[in-house]
Image (cartoon, rainbow, N blue to C red; front, side, top):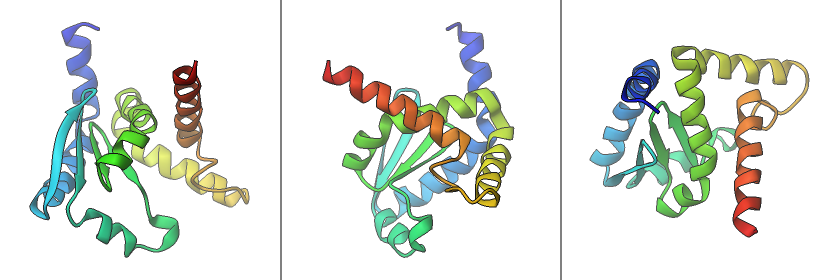
Length: 140
């Protein structure tokens, strides 16, 4: 990928990345860590896990992607979720500032149709499918 194309993808995803960097800064201030992996910054640990466990059960997460920033409960969770979350990074690169409203709309549509707003979300289905391909590929 050319430098110009890569710069465009980062710029297109920048609004969500900015939000992710703000959230990541809070993770760091609360004792977390950051590492750069596969073109994204991964924030983990500190008080994040305790904060997530205080959320209602349906809102809890192991990892969450905002542009090129990924928030994870801890390093082991990030290792486990990396493939899935990297699909979301690529989705942000493709959809840019439209991604978050489209993601919410997909969840709302699934909920209105009586389906699971997370598992049946179009963007989650893509991430789970790639995760399966990745895991099957590693077993071979």
